[in-house]
Length: 152
Image 1 (cartoon, rainbow, N blue to C red):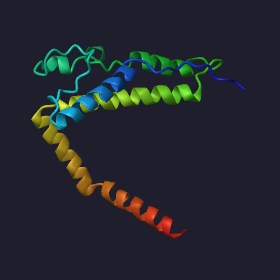
Image 2: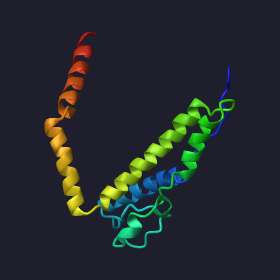
Image 3: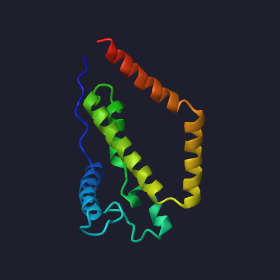
Image 4: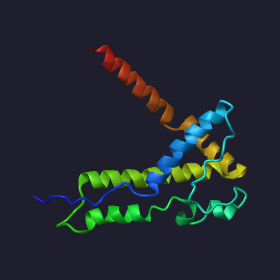
């Protein structure tokens, strides 16, 4: 039996983004209650001087504070040597960090997207909700839970 070798850690920028999100959420909550001004949620280590500098908002990953290079390298190392693989925890932990950062970056880009782009994205999402399987699937899921609960 081959035993995995630890290759994963909580790495920057994942750790940094989480800490910033927590700090910024507190500041935004206070601003909602009239204690200060709400600030834009921009990664502190990003090379973004102004939200009006569009190329800086959409630069390469190292430029925007969402660089996943080290995380991707560690993830790949979990599979490179069959005699010394990473652990299941490494794989799950690293992949979670990679995916969370990607989702966080997408949210950042959506917040700073142009109006025409947002209109197209909204139209396609609304079309899917109107014609796709999302609404029936949600309704069916809730119905199954209710019926399963009634069985005792």
